Length: 165
Image (tube, rainbow, N blue to C red; front, side, top):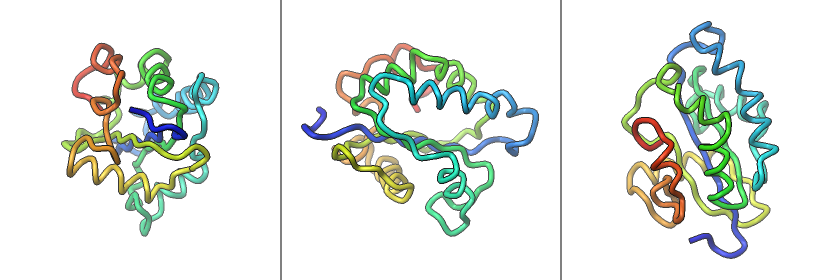
């Protein structure tokens, strides 16, 4: 249940199979601006870490993401789970999600984590990675959860392809 005075933070992380300039990931790369623009215009969108900041975090070998040049991630905040759910499963984002196996290396660990943040809080990459590690180690909890830990979220059960992210 969403705590009063809180928004939903979301972090997803993947490693591309090929370099960003490789033609095999061109559709993904070419679609990022479009998908992010739709996110920003979506009802319930609050904030997203800027492209330059995310790129710097992804490339920093001393940073929380480890400096892998193929890292692709997003850190955003939404008013509530329903808003994020509508964006993920009922916009063009779903078309990109359906093609994730073409672009991302398969992993046995979670790629997505969510958690509640006080209204106005802007999470950091370090905070997001800590939540992702906690979720990977402990599963759904009040501090870090996936779609199954988000009460009243059902579209992921119907609309996803393959395993839950």
